Length: 132
Image (tube, one colour):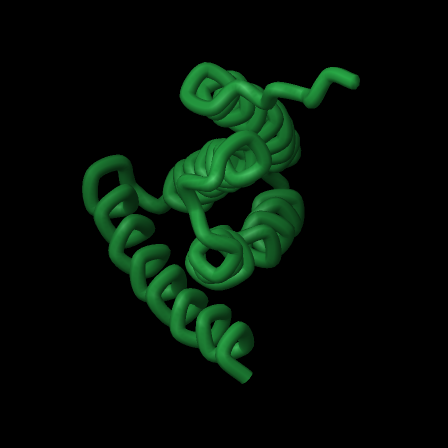
């Protein structure tokens, strides 16, 4: 029950953070293109890879903290379902180029952010394999 509570409260925090970040990005860059969702998904991809790499390579994060941050906070923060809807919305209004751009930027941006998070995590906590 403890671990479920960590995910539950973490995801609430992540959802609230998503709302704030999305609002800030839309205020700054407008709503004609889903910049907010892209920023959230790229940041979430980076942070998830960073946390998982650090967790794999060190004892810096207790397993409960890792769970609260990944399944909880980042699970509530990232917006894959919004990405799907916004892509279909762009296609539906005839903006095929913007729809395709949204998909390309999100996929490439999230993969690139994951690689960057993984590499930073390896720099911060290199995994050392035991020698026999």
